[in-house]
Image 1 (cartoon, rainbow, N blue to C red):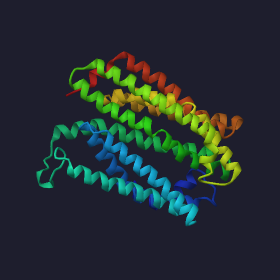
Image 2: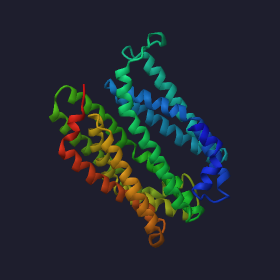
Image 3: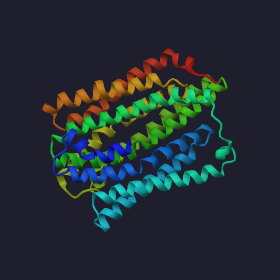
Image 4: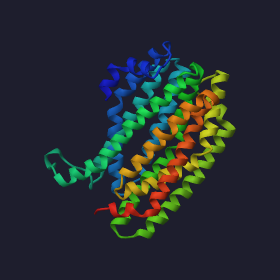
Length: 337
C-alpha cells in the first residue's frame, strides 16, 4: 500500500478533487508519511501483543509519548525552522519510528514474549484464527480510509481555507479521541480474559467502568475545545478564517465525543469476544450509508458544516445498532478459548 501510495499520490489527490495548487504539497506530505507506515503497523502489532498479556499501560504510554513528540516536532520544524509541510510529515515518521523501536526494546525485555526466529513454528490453527479475526479488521480499515478520502473530496469543494482548517482540526481530533480508543482496546483484552474465565458479570462492569471513564475524559476535552479551540488552531495557522472554521469543527464534533466513546466501548466488547464481523459492518454502515451521504446531500444547504455534523450523525446510528446487537447477547456465543 505504501509503494502504491508513493507512486500514485498525485493521481489520488486529483481523484478526490484537491485543488491543483495544493496537490504538490499534499503529495510530498503523503510520500514521506507512507515511508513510516511499517513503523505504524509494527507498533500496532507489538501493542496488541502487550495488551494480550495484560499490559495495557505500556502501549498507552508509548502512544502518548509518540503523539506529544509529534506535536513538539511539528511546532519546532514549522514555527521555528520554517520548513513547511514536508517537515510535518518527517515529524510524524520520526515520532512513530521512535515509538516502534522503544516497543521492540520493551518486548525483548519481557521474558514471556521474548523469542528467537529459530524457535518459530507455523501453527495452522492459530494462523486460521488470526485470519478470521484480523481480516475483517483489515478490510474495515481499508474501506474506512477510502471513506475518509471521500469526505475529503466533499470538503475540497469549499476551498483552500476550509481544507486547511479541516486538516488541522483532524490532527487535534485524532489526539482527542485517543483516550477513548485506548480504553476500548484495553476493554477488549479485559473482555477476552474474563470470558475465558467464565466471569460474564465482570464484562458488564468493565463496560460500565470504561464508558464512565470515557465520559469524564470526553467531557473535559469538549470543554477545552469550546474555550481554547481558537488557541489550539493557532498552533497550526494564524489565518483567522482558517482558525474559525477549525474551531467550528472541533466544537461540533467534540460535543459528541461521549457518544463516540460509548460506541467504541460497546464494539470493543464484541471484538473482545471474537465477534469482529458485526462491529465491522456497523462501522462501515455509519460511514458509508450515513456519514458520507449526509455530508454529500446536505453540503449544498449547510456548507462545510454538513461534513462536521456528519460525524455525530454517523456515530448516533452506529450506537443504536451496536447497542441493539449487544443486548441480544449473541456476541457471547462467538467466544472460543
